Length: 566
Image (cartoon, rainbow, N blue to C red; front, side, top):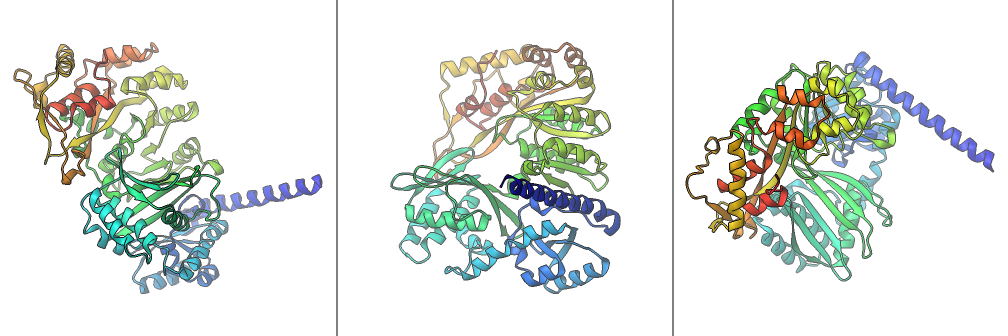
């Protein structure tokens, strides 16, 4: 019996080895022989709408698989992209008014895509007629949604008609979340009900309660369109699906975890509009903006962002990439996962099961002759060392690091065994950021400043002035009584008093004094003291500038940074 087991294991290892050899061969032949990019479909989502453009029997016969559809652009994987074959395929898709983009893929990659035809077959047999969520139907729903109350009303109205009710609840939830710019949708089962909540500007808001029966159907539908196992409810599952609104592809990352009363569902909405934030509109003060522009336009160096989850680091990194992108440079990203697709930039996604980690991704990227590399996160010593070495060998490297502030970047890299003498030449800029909610311009009102608040504001201003910073440069007159504002709430802001978010930042750049202290293995406090005399504000000072200009509230800034910090 054990011999048979060993034989099965050996056969499996042999199959895996052959598959890997085929993938490696695709990587070699794609550009060199056929002049098309290689694609590994095992690490990217396959879209049912793309597969629907060709019958399964034809796809298998021609050994092709459409895997992504954005507007009229269709992305097609081909096993053997010979010129005559590509010409025939091009005609096939253009006759159907699509613009095809071809890639070379291995047979095992294609089989992964072909397996998704089972879902399409299931969809055609579905009583509701379709499991897909139509962008057109969402647009019709969005017309009447301006706030959370409109979403609740739409769901209540649809419940009066018990035909397809549960199907429409999901569509209204997604349409409503997109309409009011929510970042996440939560379905949370409890003993006798299911709570529907949205994360709006970083804060969870309860929309309404729905029935467990409706949640059960919504759960199955989400699993089906996300490519998850429908019959499994005892393990956590992650999936993804896309919706098209005009020319925009909105991706939804789905997470399900088992609970005492059913599976909790969270859908993260990745809307390209939220990433199209110009660097100029992110709340970066003018002097700091000049520093950012100077550093990101250098041909080499290491620029690191710090901040907790949800602090906008990815948006800032993407804004940097979009700012410097040109057809004359090659940009490669290694992400986990790819949150937004950026035109003209080579984006790759980590896959721990296949050993494609940030470290392996960085090593592979360096063999692709890049000018700029973005590594989603530096987690270990080896990745840190290679990132630093890359910055020294003519590459501009962007990444994120887990520290509490900009001053913590240098000690953290030294903890990761980066040689301080090398770090001096490699590190260009350390940035810390947080997100705070903007006060609603329609309903904010002036408030009386409390004694403690006034004392903290004055202490921060005096400290800044002692380091040569002039608040007049930021539109603040310290010689007149301060005005600060508080939220009240109105229909325009879902009765929260806030609408939208803005960043607060601090940065430390390598000047002579910072370089001098790095080689001494400094503490975070020592770096802070040296950096105090740099022209940019600390994150506390930047937050208070936005409070005194009426952009956000004192409470918002105090909730994300310690304003009493020495």
